Image (cartoon, rainbow, N blue to C red; front, side, top):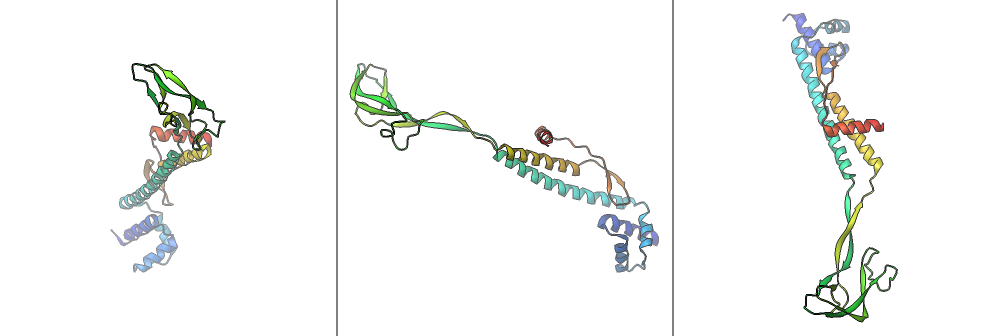
Length: 235
């Protein structure tokens, strides 16, 4: 390699890899013992085509930058996805307290206390913990005779207070925060588009500004594609 070729090589390398201006390259030459004082000389060097070695180094630099950016956008995407999952709609069980029941397993009638249901409006006879969904009973002064196989509340034989158990009486759906969910979906789609931008298929053509000409082709998985489509429609 001749002296000129060496200087051209260094000038192109410092320009494309270190992003130095011609004036800064002059300073770099002087720091390394080269007797170059004119920025116009450096510009002449930069007008020459880069060697294969420099092209490979530039490609590697851009690949490293793209990979770092892609990893960052992937982290941001996962954070947005976690936010969306946190805002997901869940069905919560609705419970109520109901009387424990037992069955007359004797071969003859059983004598038990009569009972009645206490309505929610009768707060004086309902326990403090009772809600409107809870089924509350009260034993009366009367008696009733139940044949074999009939159910009756636990405690009726002894004239004590009724006993209760918890049961699931339905499902209640959370009210979603639609605005926050929409924002999370848009954020996911945005990060995946940015990741696609930096992970596209790049050519090796280099222009004088040191940038690579870009041709992009990226495929999304089904879930991500749906998020991108939905966010695009919302915009």
